[in-house]
Amino acid sequence: MNGDPQQIHGACHCGSVKFRVRLADGLNTARRCNCSYCSMRGAVAVSAALQDIEITAGEEWLTLYQFNTRCGIYTHHQRRSNPDQYGINAACLEGISPFDFSEVPVNEGRVHPRDKAGGGGPDIAGHLRYFPVKR
Picture 1 (cartoon, rainbow, N blue to C red):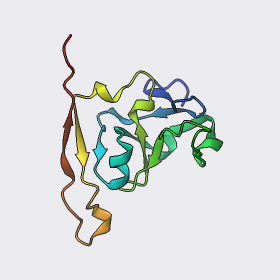
Picture 2: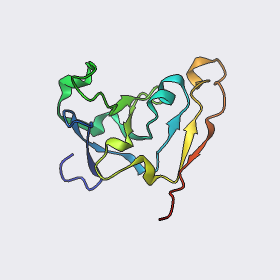
Picture 3: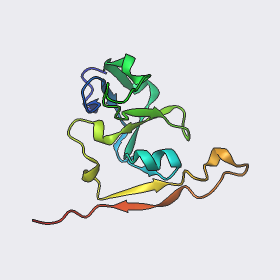
Picture 4: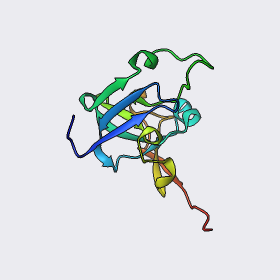
């Protein structure tokens, strides 16, 4: 991945976990999900192919989180709807904030297509919008 112009560096909050990633379609894949897990996590995720992420530090901290020993910030997960991709927490990417997105689609995760014969519910449950206060 070295020298790739689309390569972005990322890290967890405390910096113990560091990675490089090439996003599948830049920031165009930004989304949230309304399943119980994602609702509590509250992250904006973007997509990367499994082979396009490289953990450069702290791989041992990805499997264990104990309160007050590391930050525990979610950096990425293997997508259930597309197991060939990771969902990358956009807030962990260098120079990116979840507030950079004025509108983010919210995937319908409460009725997931893999949960029900015939495909579950609609793909999009709604949209989250951010309107910054002008100062």
